[in-house]
Length: 126
Image (cartoon, rainbow, N blue to C red; front, side, top):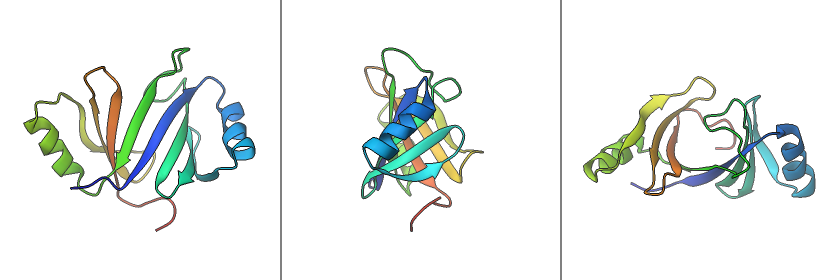
């Protein structure tokens, strides 16, 4: 069981403005572009995701909530491992309607939302 990549999601009041910054100022490659979110490759399999803070899983806040996500082909192994360790699961692995993937959600001891994602069909690259 290993982690294959990372997306750190940030939630924005103005998704268009944030997208322009990461694309035009930072120069990151946009690899996913859906109404709900934009994802930019930072390096290799490390990414930053920009989410519409009015419709995403978390909502925009001045305190800047963060959801840290990892890729793994063994989402069910992670689910079992976390349950065995007594971690409360917020969402068991489930297929998402907006991209070909399954997601598992849980929180760390301080309440930060963490996610393991399994691509069923990776929307970019190999």
